Length: 140
Ligand code: RTP
Ligand code: MG
Image: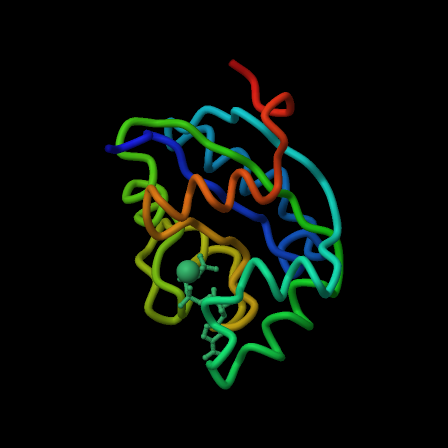
């Protein structure tokens, strides 16, 4: 069943570049309501667990190193059709292939350092949201 929620992170590259405000503006302009949000830095253990599905991929080490390299903003977002619509808003993984007007087209610099994360399924949105937020940190 669609939960109408997705999970996002503004990644360390976008935080360092001073784009938290710009990206949150695009998210709210896109019709997403913020249900939970925090500014935090992932430990190596947390990043490894969050990206465990990619543990066999050649870029895993680089990805964990990048995701722990500085603070991030983690958030749970709500909108009808949230998972798919959010992936449309962020654009392709590789910013060179991202559509005009997408967050990654505007703010990502490379395939690895691509500004934002968006869940890829309702199931993962729930798992990822619960990974970062306790139930009482999510507004009703
Ligand atoms: P995300 O999970 O961050 O929303 O990105 P995605 O679904 O578009 O891409 P995914 O395949 O899940 O990959 C997760 C993240 O790993 C990094 N990556 N680097 N160097 C590379 O070839 C490579 N491929 C993927 C990116 O940071 C990507 O967002
Ligand atoms: Mg992904």
